[in-house]
Amino acid sequence: MIELLSILAPAFVLGLLGSGHCLGMCGGLMGALAMATTPGQMPRLPLLLGYNLGRVMSYGLAGLLFGGLGLAVAHSPALTLLRGCAAMLLIALGAYLAGWWHGVTRIETLGRGVWRHLQPLGRRLLPPRTLPQALALGAVWGWLPCGLVYSALLWSAAQGDLLHSMAAMLAFGLGTCPMLFATGLASRTLLGWLRRRGVRLAGGVLVMAFGVWSVPGPHQHWLMSRMNIGPVLAP
Image (cartoon, rainbow, N blue to C red; front, side, top):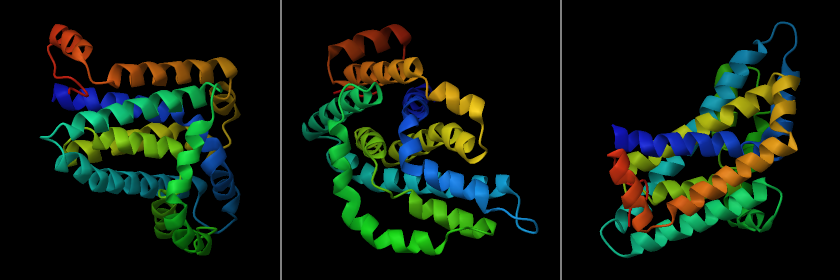
């Protein structure tokens, strides 16, 4: 249980701190959801819940699929290489969140081929007027090319376990929900706080620190032995 929590907690924090990136990717859609309701239609909150549930479910499915990559190399030196790549990507993502370097956004081009086929389906679901439509829209939008999601996916795959990878992506998805709910509900207080330069800088530094910590090495064994739990990304 403690080992699983050591995976879920960082994944949730990564989603929470990195969700400022979601404003650019999904913020417009959440605003559209907020404006989609008119008298006689389903209230706004259930639609937001349905959208985010569908999105998080897609993240979980992606984690399960990518978990197969980690499982395939779980007992080989390639797993250490995979974990090292995941750590480097997290460091790059933290630099992006802090506003220092934007190179990580280039990996978003990797998923554009798939998104080209899914985007028309998502457009047909707009604006969602029922809970199933909102759920389906979120499930489609969960595959939007996103450097933040790809970073989390690679890190989750590096766990070397299908269920742990899926659980990590579910926790990551839940971490992104407060930002998108705030956007959909037009919560200016929360949005204003999350947009502050100091908050984004702190979030970026924390994600970078987690990336440095995730680099396979003896430092993980040393600290985790003091905490009496297994390493998050042990070599």
